[in-house]
Length: 221
Image (tube, rainbow, N blue to C red):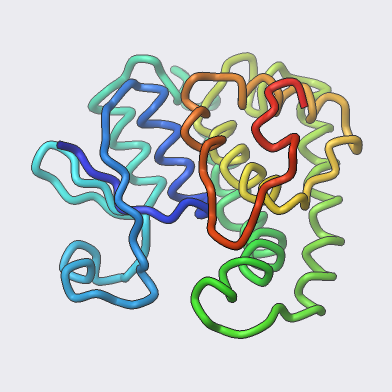
């Protein structure tokens, strides 16, 4: 059995889960308390990070290399476009969300409000939360601008860029930190992507001590 070691509210784990589900690769989800640095887990990934994927006898770490490996081994349906220019745009946006968005928003909202409590690191830093709440507006506006010009974030077809963005936003949506009224284009895009079968297991996630808002699993908001 293929296995994915993950935590439910990790955008990097969710990105990999979406790719696996979209390509119809069956996996067993193993929730990993990576911060406890269990020796067995450290043997799988000395960086002590999730996700870690066991697939066909291989142990794979780091979300973007995992997703690109899956794209090479399981090319249907494609999540990277055919031309080098189009692939560059997808990779640029994946980097945008996993680096810039993560640093400015996810780490300051999700990690402060949820991860600190789960990992026993104390209370949220109000300055970080305030900074994240301010920064997310810029990012939502940028996504809305892109979607006013394109069917999907990177072009006319759904790609890994959409999964990277949806992974981060779905985590923030779980804690009601996304203003979906800020952009109708963005809201329509998210409704479209969370209606895909690949999103079902993510919408079913439950984190003890944190209940999602009513609209979280509502495909029509």
